[in-house]
Length: 248
Image 1 (spheres, rainbow, N blue to C red):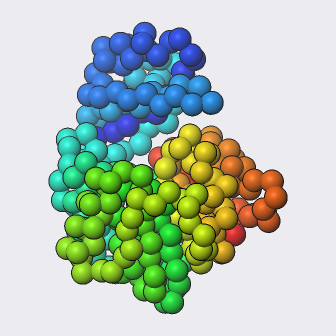
Image 2: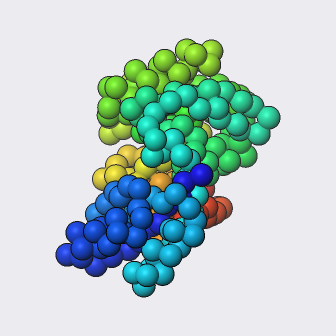
């Protein structure tokens, strides 16, 4: 198992701290930079190494396990949703079921999807969430993504799992219809520019994940733009430093 240390740092210190993390045994480092300031994501082979690095730096950090595939590259993965099981090959797209935000979304889909429901998966990636919604009994599932390669990957995964979902690179701003359930699994910096369109597409509940725990309020605020009926947080859960919310 691999472990991930998510560490908030001050602007201007990213390069120095990244170098320190390499020295402390990190196997891979990525940087997220948005309005909250930079965050470093550092992979480690063991929990002890990850926690030791955070303690050595003396900075706010969260340590949690990650799917080894997230660091070793793409490949097929088995996804379990309740008693259902299906296979996803993410290729170059996000979504093999191992990331905490995806697992939060899958758990919420299992709870919320009902027969006859319409579901929009905004930023579908590999199609994992759209396929899960279809497997759980949704009557109509639409998956959109700005990446044409992701749409092709999602289409192949849908065919491999014998589910019918509508997939396109349609921009969410161009959607005129509404859905009983909208699911959005993306970083908060990517959610914010489209949050108003997400809200307008929702005629029921919204599942949102992909935000770090301390960003959950920011994600909820983005989904309540002026001029649109407010959505309340119905449920919130954290998993290894990542947050998942249901608003409705």
